[in-house]
Length: 219
Image (cartoon, rainbow, N blue to C red; front, top):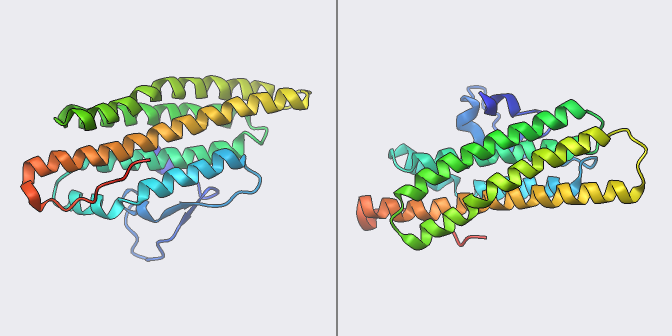
């Protein structure tokens, strides 16, 4: 499972101290990204923000899943959290010398991006509110480009690790990578929040006014 394999204890803190702990997939609400002063702070802080923002609606998603509603939106949030974890890992790797790990991390982020698109499109297709569906689709459309660019930029960064580059060259390369990573995380957050809003509409049509979902204000 990609999620299990990427829950690296060097980058995460699990707040669940229960000895009868449940499998990781059901404990994802308790996962936090640890501070890392040696990581690229711009990417690291954006990853923490993505995780925190996605977790905000966890309780409502848990209720929906218990009632056998909104499974796609809950799955989407879980993938977004995995991506936040990977981005925090990348924030550390870009300041190191492990070329193989950096490239592998970028590839894993691309895989999670593909899952975001699949799950997001599923919700988009089900939502009959054109405004909500359009908002969700707009965020989804940006993900393939940002994801592909991140793989390319990470590979370039990896190939230049250990080389004798000028400060200007190092700064220029990092600035482009950072902006791209921020754009990708921003799109993912937009997808999750738009999907939650679309799910409110979908379930209100199915269940009527008794639906208890809390509406997102968006980003």
